[in-house]
Amino acid sequence: MLDYLVIGAGPAGLQMGWFLRAAGRSYTIMEAGPAPGTFFATFPRHRTLISINKKYNGTDDPELNLRMDWNSLLSDDPELLFTRFSDRYFPHADDMVRYLARFAEGLDVVYGSRARHVTRNDDGFAVTDDHGTVRTARRLIIATGVSRENVPAIPGVEQAEQYGVVSVDPKEFVDKRVLIIGKGNSAFETADNLVETAAVVHVAGPRSVKMAWRTHYVGHLRAVNNNFLDTYQLKSQNAVLDGEVRHIERLDDGTYRVTVAFVRADEVTKDIPYDRVIVCAGFAFDRSIFDDTCRPALHASGRFPALTPAYESVDVPGLHFAGTITQSRDFKRGTSGFIHGFRYGVRALHRILEERHHDVRWPGEDVGADPKAMAQAVLDRVNRSSALWQQFGVIADVITHDGRYLEERPVDLPIDGPHYTITLEYGPGHDQVDPFDVTVGRITQSDAARADEGHYLHPVVRHHRPGEEPAVHHVTENLENDWTSPDVHLEPLRAFFARTV
Image 1 (tube, rainbow, N blue to C red):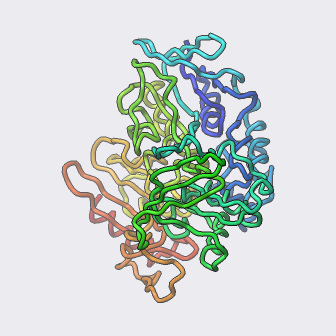
Image 2 (image 1 turned 180 degrees about the horizontal axis):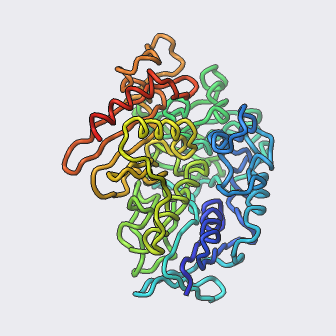
Image 3 (image 1 turned 180 degrees about the vertical axis):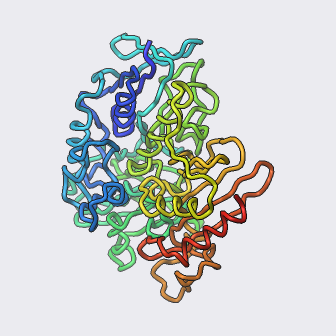
């Protein structure tokens, strides 16, 4: 019996495989496709990733460079950086396929082995693939990604075309009226592809479009996909409909009649004719392979598994999750749905498993109880850590009651006794402020007394005592994320530790 069985050889499964191999654990990765990263062989459909690949950052510090590298997996091999595979800021999806194939070399991956049935007993888990082969393991890690297209419950939606299979050739839409259901990046990349050929393109959904540059959630609409908004605002026949699609009817001539209930227009409902209707409503986790002994509970309207802080199913012990399907932990507010976030989640999961099952102490060092030494240790980390930077508010460093500094734990993973957590966070109401509105005031970067009013990303230190509200210290924000000032950053933090240690 294996220590671990991993299902899925996408980025998360390969990342976990790398850690398991390095730790000397017995493991196998099952992959349905003929090669790793098969999701990226198809998606995104228009082949431009929205994960940035900033190669030149003015530093040779590999940890700082990971703050601007959203595609690399974690390893100790500089040749296994995505920046070796593409120079483009928004890379082509084929570059990701090539990168994952290189990263997978040397890992124990069984290709062409689709998991069909998962059961659980007292010893662990058994997974049967589509060839009838059964593999067993004490613990199971699901890294399948979001493999099922999310289809909204609209009467007649089965007659529409799905994002995953609709043609990406704009010539097939010449002079057509097209409705796209959804307001995320897949919807807008599809719309942008059609602006030169379609007569009319409507993008519809009941909620307002949210821009990533305002919310700081990279899954909201990105600038690289929002050119379509120009064609709406500058009267080019296209439109964004703030309304709920109530009904889709396919007519005898092959066209559609779609009933839309508008949210803020004068019309209550309106029937609108279209030649094509495309559903671009995102993706969801598919739990159909699990039987009743281990079917995990779901979260976020059934789109993702419900997880504990240890990335474990809330109702199936020993069933863990890795990758984009862990975004129930920070749904629509963090980065767990993306490589630059979940690579640190996978590392945290591996450390949790090592600590729980193999008696391996969480990595850390002793800093003692001297307030200045504690403050300096914190500032050294927040000035360099890529994990705290990328997993803002989700991954935390911890200083324990006995003065041990632990790196990169899930912020709500239980820990005994009084302790400090160190995170990077945006300020309250940050998504309510237009970052380009120069009339909106900001605190002075040297005003440590008002650091808690800062909107931008900045360090937050909390002292936790059982049964008490945590004491909180904010380190003032800085334009270049340089928290090294003795007077503005170090001394106020030292004084906080002196009061609370």
